Amino acid sequence: MSDERLNRIAPDFTLPATDGSTVSLESVRGEKGTVVAFICNHCPYVVSSVRRMVEDAKALAGDGVGFVAICANDAQRYPADSFERMKVFAETHGFTFPYLHDEDQSVARAYQAAVTPDFFGLDADGVIKYRGRMDAGQTSAPPPDAPRELLLAMRQIAASGEGPSGQKPPAGCSIKWR
Image 1 (tube, rainbow, N blue to C red):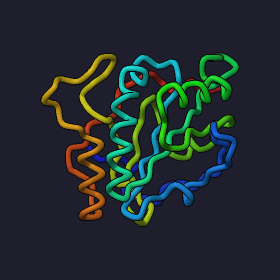
Image 2: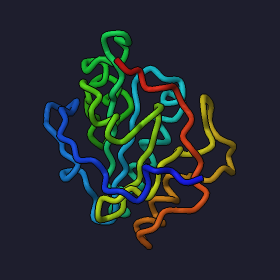
Image 3: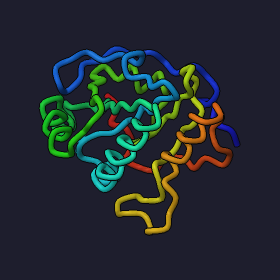
C-alpha cells in the first residue's frame, strides 16, 4: 500500500519560530534533504523520543540534511502546546533546529500530517521521499538494537535521492485539530 504523500513536492510554509524569527521551508532546506517533523509538547510519544530526535537532527545536519519541527495542535484546547510553552520545550530539550508554530493548522493540513510525531523526509529537490516514524520507540525507548529508521532513511535519500521501501507509518497522538 503506497502513501499518497510520497513523491510530491513538499508544501511550502513560512511560520513563526520559538526564537523570534520567521522561518520558511526554503530557509531550512539542507543541501541533501530536509526533515519536516510535526510534534507537540505534551504527547507522550514526543516526550519519550525528543532526546533521540535532537540527536538525529544533529547527526543529519552533519550529512547536509536540514531539520525543522512544527507544532500545529490547537493551543486553545491544549494549553500545554501554546507558543509560549513551545519556547520552553525547545530550550529545555536543546533544539538545534527551528521549532515553528502552525497556529491556523494550514501547514499540517497541506502535509496531511496525522499524529505527533509525524516525520516527512524530503530529497534535495524538496520532494517527499519518506513519511513515517523515527524508530520503533513509542512511549518508551526502542530496543537497543532497533534501527534508527528516520536517520537511515534520510541518509539513503541524501545518497541516492530515493526513500526506503517498506516505510513504517508514524505512531503517536492525533493532531489536535480545531
